Image (cartoon, rainbow, N blue to C red; front, side, top):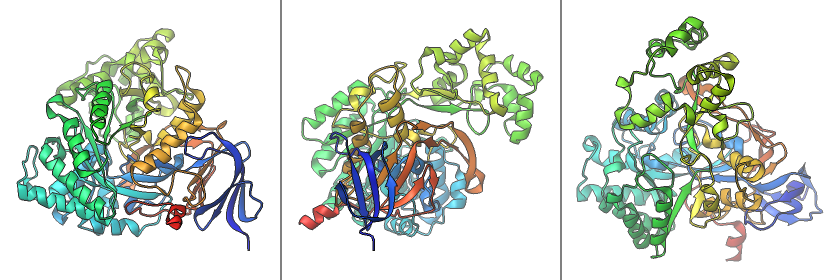
Length: 588
């Protein structure tokens, strides 16, 4: 019998610790890394990694696969980008606990906040659970290409306790708060990795109602934090995760610091340049650090690029969505829409019209106007598109160079390649027209790379490709500023993210750790062109994006992807609570 199950030979090992790369072999046995270095034994299978990078599998801590994880084994698109562990249940939305009469309400909340087709969720979710522990049991039944862990979501908890009283601005009683706290503690004891909430006006249900956590008091949130602490003391691991507008009068950092200090749990929040946030990003970081200097443990989740919209004619928003001519064909089948769009008479009529904002959501009208008029802030997505575009890539600049009106240029761009052209509009994290502000944050111990939103915003973004973008853009090919080292990039997407959520058994290539490994050809690594698929249940749509350069992805010692193609293997499962490396457990 071979000594090992798998040996990866001769690769450039970037082990996830941030230490310098080196050349060596990695041997795998029984789902764990058995040896690293010069290995003389044999294996049932070998992978030649000469000239390739060998790194840990990526740990993505901000996803929304809460529904998809109950029916989908491949877990695309995150699994296409080297991710071997996802944490979901972010932003206070999810599907447990769930009383039978709240199923549609929870779906509408997820659809409104995360742009996941409600029809797909309604058809795909089986609802063979009510309590949060029962939801974990349901997740455990389905093997996948990746491991999944999850938060207890605030929206579901409030709906479960308050029932029909859960309305925008609802004030829970002390008994309600105690009941919610009990649910969260029970969830952490059962294996949840934390609790999440949302406090931003950008997050609403499909009916336009604010999500439940938006108006929650500090007293409610701190009480839940204490419940998390009790669950953690009983052997669990609990991270308090939040998206917020960070209004100054809310004193968010004050209660976050109080919660972290008193409950002994880390608090993490989405740190962005955002039109909805009153505090600029540098003030967010400064205020967080002041609380940490006073004994808190607050960690900022940062995105790796501008959070924006990928616009196209079909299935998503686009710059002409509020023109009367478009509204007249908006509900037609795509074939009929396309025929109209390619008709010169229709084009002439549409371009002659003004936008009609009477049906636009008034609370985000500024965003709507940028989408429909901001040609200087919209960029042409050509085959070699740089997600840090400069002004020369804007619709205005390209139109001027072509001697065309900007709106006509945008229209014709979207009509390219059989009306499948794309325009990129970075709404968040691009106030300066570059990503320079993110460079120092990627070298800070109190920030973590995150906010991919894998599985969400199906009709507008595809940031699940963030791990690939990190390597291709920040390490390999950034042109407009300083890059980061490969060692730092791998550490931030592997070990740092894993440790925040108590997953100490992964994120490092060393004996005793999970054999979650990527073999990457950095020379070939490249993001592909996005496309719109209709492959969710009930024909639901989603934007997808693949990449070249992933030679192999290995989960728990099993090859799940070869050259970007799923092997059909499903070694992934559910993560319940904190994890320890086998080597550490053996030492005790």
